[in-house]
Image 1 (tube, rainbow, N blue to C red):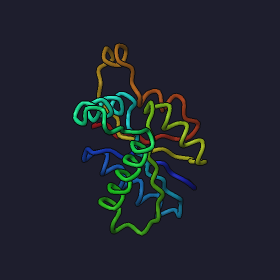
Image 2 (cartoon, rainbow, N blue to C red):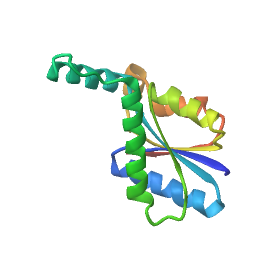
Image 3 (cartoon, rainbow, N blue to C red):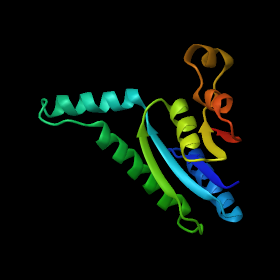
Length: 148
């Protein structure tokens, strides 16, 4: 492994996975990128809520959402990797989770992806799709998944 991408999130499982990715990357001298994605639907909802609260006087731009996601990835990195001897890059973005993970991993030359997935029944996957499954199928590199 030369460069790992860890998708960070608020759950304890995601935080534990981020720490494990950091320890593994540090152990083999690999680069580490921490990625947080704001889903497009979440962005739209936050933008609409801000417009309602401020009666249209304030806007919530994609750039602000991207910076907020990057700051979140940085906060998680500081929280879970404070005693791991590794430098890491933080990235934030807005978009479809599965597409974004695969695109960022390719763009950054990552050769391993770490992601926390959700447990879903086969029916739930069929009805609502499954981002984790899409990532596993579309990524050209190994993907480590821990389910919450």
